[in-house]
Length: 239
Image (tube, rainbow, N blue to C red):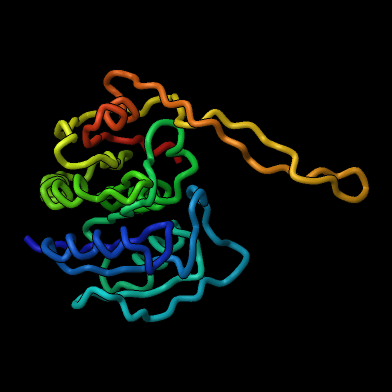
């Protein structure tokens, strides 16, 4: 049965990952895109309460979809998209394809995951998709529709979303798909803050300064990605 699918991302409505996700989703039903008008990475699950949200029709580069740009956050896009823009509520929310993994402790900051969590909070079956930063899309493009076909037929599981991450490796290096991955408490980066400059009145300007230090962990999302597997896991919505 064809689905009503609402899609957003956090990299902006013109992002390549969003275009590829929408193109794949067209095979599964009627697609609506409500996505930020610019970059909103690390916005987590934030929403706009004290300023209006501007929504405009958008000439999206995939034909046959309903597309709108939005001045708000990715979570705003799901809220205004499903509650006001769409004439009927969606059957499924999809977010991504994020430019960068959303695994382990990073998911708490991710607006891609945050938007999917908002979809679940509104009562929709929700799936987040992410991939590596290196621009290698072979594994994503190989497995995206297969995994999408599997997950769109899953029943809505109250309190949970599906979180899918594709390893940024050449296809011949990918070892397959691992399901039921748990969320690791580790991180890709060990963060600190470096001083950028002194400010007037004793202030100091700081900038985050992360050291890449990944550690694999068996059974988890970060372990799957580091071992060149596609990771599929359930993330609990604690909102």
